[in-house]
Amino acid sequence: MHVAAPRRRAAAVAAGLGCLVLPLVASGPKAVASPPLAAGTMAAAPYEYLGWGNPQKPTDVMAATGVKWFTLAFILSDGGCNPKWDGSRALTGGSDQSAINAIRGAGGDVVISVGGWSGNKLGEKCSNASALAGAYQKVIDAYHLKALDIDIENTEFSNATVRKRVVDALKIVKTNNPGIVTYVTMGTTPTGPDANGKDLIKKGAAAGLANDGWVVMPFDFGGHSGSMGSATVSALEGLKATVKSAYGYGDDTAYRRIGVSSMNGKTDEAGETVTTGDFQTILGYAKQHHIARYSFWSVNRDRQCGSGGSGDSCSGVSQAPYAFTKIVVQYTG
Image 1 (cartoon, rainbow, N blue to C red):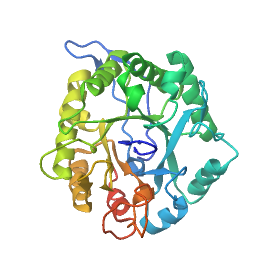
Image 2: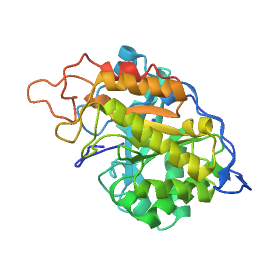
Image 3: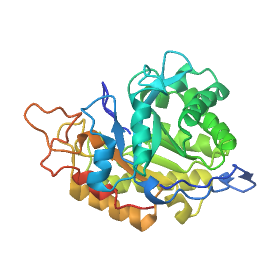
Image 4: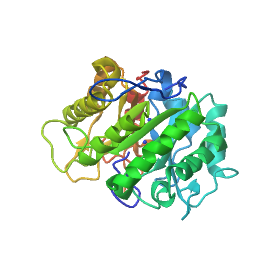
């Protein structure tokens, strides 16, 4: 994602009813018992970052678009193994909790995203998987969450020790919170996860983590061929192949365990633009394969720029208000 650096974010399905993760004996790739699928409107939970980009009132977005779920970003470390909004705002008692209460009061709900590109990461500041799971648990308990997104980027993503710590912590979270839906969101190449992404998924399979959605952010590619819609499909096919191979899933199950978090309009890369037509292409793919998640970065940007508008608060393309959200909300899992 954005936030003081290219975001690539990351990020997000009515509450799924999970189960304990039970590794199965299998030849070849390690097989893991599939959790019940996350279904419904949680599958379309666009990111909104209440910390920047002149955020809209979530309830106004709900009224204008019909969206029910948001992925709210970001939870970071306060310098130690303790979660705070942007690393500085308390979990409860402030404006973030007020926004969540308002969303729920209007009949919606939230996925909360931990990580992003910038700031101190819990995966690095917590010294072991148990401590990291405890930090995640504080967020879950604060809001009685049905879903948690780990947006693993930058130094968290590039460190093999931290990648394993995140996977092991999520395994603990899944065991201690039956029914919780978990997403792991990461960057990608146009052909699928890079070496770090593949290693992260393999570590998940080896740990017996029945993750609900391995999610890629198909933008900031540094070059690609064809439309951003077709490049996204290519990235998702590569992700599906990686998940299938690591877990020993069949094709249908593998598709249902992948997801996408795009970026609307002009991305962080010069000359790279994701159009509403590209979003329609992604929507068609999502419906065809029943993927776990169709999200994007971000609601803050889902409007046309005015004079002097910042890329954090508008898309950089000609559009009607909430044109991208109105496409994503059509996805129901």
